[in-house]
Length: 465
Ligand SMILES: [Ca+2]
Ligand SMILES: [Ca+2]
Ligand SMILES: [Ca+2]
Ligand SMILES: [Ca+2]
Image (cartoon, protein in one colour):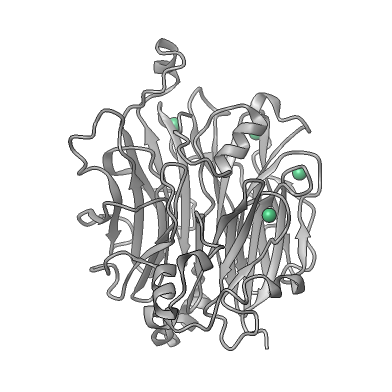
């Protein structure tokens, strides 16, 4: 689509454009899980929520940023000549689930991509052969995955059914052994993209961006980059994705939005950015980072609040019990040199003002910003939580290399340090996704070090003593 690439750093979008010579909207990987089992565990541990103070009192992070990496085992999950991109990960108990988007042929012409799924039953030591979830001739892209007990839910964007993009949905009720025929959740005449999914118990929630300009309009304005209004759409299922309620429109007049969603008990939380529109600088009330929540399983949503009006990017949201954590770095629209966050301890009724993760840390330790050399232009921030929140992101090492970092500040008494370079290789490593189950942290990302996009995987014990 018509993304403005203001950021010269490689990003998911940039590399993909280079490779495929096509334009499209990027969905940055995101997800987090809330299983019932972990929820109960989380209730017990709610008072151990990571706090700002805890973040500030870390020992030196600079010294520990790279050294532990050599101890990590990194698996190439795809290891083929096809274009393997946009991986997403979820975990439940000993099982690890991964979805990604891959070209059917070595040369990804004609946008012939499908959505693939693999699983591990041994905490990521071994994985099954892939299942093709989309298996159509359309451009199947940007999968998202969520898990609740034995049920796995996947959405992606596909243009197979019509001349615009739709949000496709499939589920597995048998731990990924089989999946249902995909169904069309959006079913609109306009482009439906940037989908995200959240699951809690037997409830399934999907949010996406709907775009006014569709392919019919494009026929009249070929090569036009003018965009119409965007909208934030939402659908809920209360029966494990068997049926979905009608679509709700949460906000209109948005622009280049990447809505994110998470849920806990009856609460549903949604956050999204809305970028400035060209020629519409006079009024900026529609720009920023926005939030709304539902207390009734997505039946109704409360007033929209603006969490940030500057230094905002593509956000991610995570929650457990009464705690809501929203974090963001830069995006292809905004080049931030920090990671920002807000948090709520009252079910999203009120949030802190935006704070920056590393500036606070720097000031506390008296470090110069230049010492934090691994925090240049963090982007594609992802978050997951169990009783605490874990953040991964990509950042630039040099113009030819990006790496994946994990804020492991919450690794209790761990010798691993506090910020870990997970990829630590020579090529572009990007688009991380993170999941937590029990004492294990699982991270995947897209890596071009093999001179071909592959999905890389690693796991880290939370308490590596
Ligand atoms: Ca590949
Ligand atoms: Ca396809
Ligand atoms: Ca559509
Ligand atoms: Ca790298």
